[in-house]
Image (cartoon, rainbow, N blue to C red; front, side, top):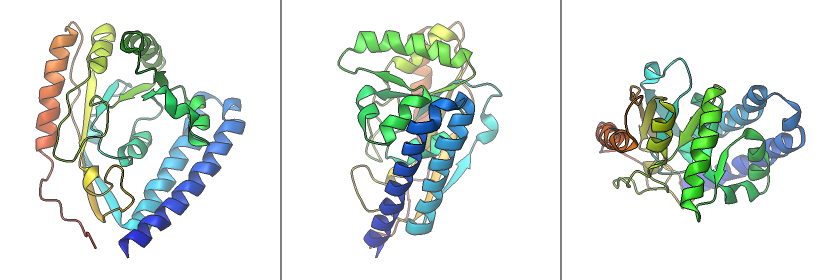
Length: 244
């Protein structure tokens, strides 16, 4: 039964992606950036999360929203599944996401994503990518746009913490903007590279801002890593899911 519900989710998810992707590609460039983000991205992701709850019974609970600063900063999020890429778009508005440039060529999704000012880097050239991140990240932050990154670099298994990539710390050291960490256990309900979704409640934790002004990137990296490990340890480890 759950696999049928998962396929039902993907039917609605795909239709919504095509609809909003086409809308964003054709008309997004006509709208101011913040209006474009609200009408296209927030509506699309909001629908997808609602449809996920209706079809698959996957809900979420967030703790720490009160920790968010009044002005945008750098967001470093745990990467376990596709779920968090949707969720983040509803909280950090508007945002610019660090992505690999290949994502921009995905039909509908990538075409619309081009209009949303992501920081699209070439992973095969890490030094150039880091320079681009710092240059574009400074511009986004100074424009009042959140910069969102997945510091582990790729989706990780539920019980495995990946090594933090240096980009987030380098951007923070170069700009002095604080860092907010986001931890969650979405991989228990939306596993990476899997079709089946498992009902239950995804737990999300948002940290207090980490100050970075006047600190070296090495020190920021150490403090962010330690805070991230603590944040992830606070999540429940005995998640109950229905595997039928």
